[in-house]
Image (cartoon, rainbow, N blue to C red; front, side, top):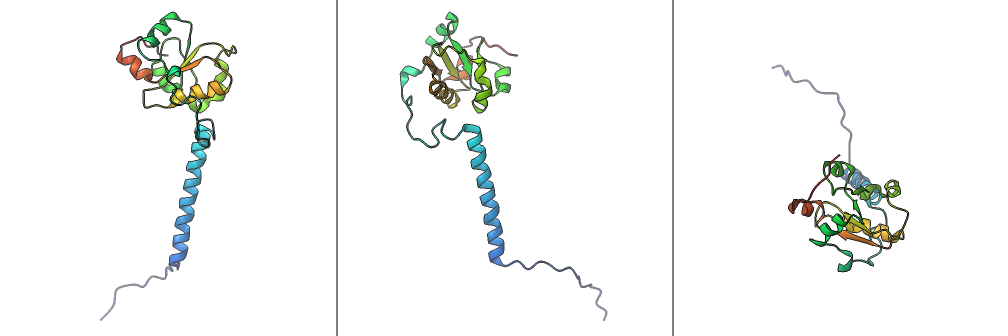
Length: 168
């Protein structure tokens, strides 16, 4: 009888279990380093409490502004509203007259804020679950702004009351 099967001359590398495990752990470590690096790049090292555990504003309700006061403040026109969301979200709809300072790109956008550190400012972001408004308020207070508060309900709360929106 004739055997029609051909033997392959292809040699497969001989990996030991230790080498495979070492390679997998190395890849996991590389991914973890990139994730940590990305998080630190996006949020900063200590700007938002990644190292320190205390916050000078945490739990301070006097720094929050809610309905209907926020609408009355906006109508008065003496406060600068600062949107902490991305530029794309800002363009889709924001509180009329608001300035966009995305939380992940604060430094280049700070020039859009007044140099007078006494100017009243209210920060906001998407909704009550979004920490960006509070984080931006912390950054501004850290940079010497004296009269900064945040609107925790954000643009979703603003829309729920059918207050006016501005788009670009």
